[in-house]
Length: 116
Image (tube, rainbow, N blue to C red; front, side, top):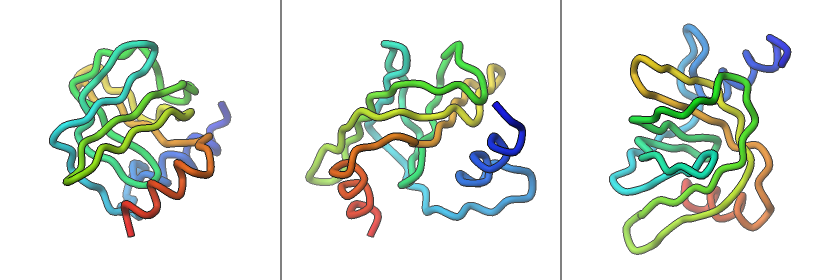
């Protein structure tokens, strides 16, 4: 993956050096993201991506993955499948962050409404 594309993706979720978050992050008490058939706890998410930990996912930064995302929010469960790109994979901290990429229209509307 080109360095410029990865830098752009990192900046979308506020992970590039010196960047301030552009998206409001929401802490998750109960939620999972499934990557390669394994579920990991979601720590927080925004309309553009997620942070999961602890995670021993073997994926690396720049990898494209199919995910299944599910979180419990007051009075509702939000769940969907989409594609994502891993923008951070830290083996020491067990953190994996991803950006949602290919999401169907209905899911995009559902997520946008949640964050309104």
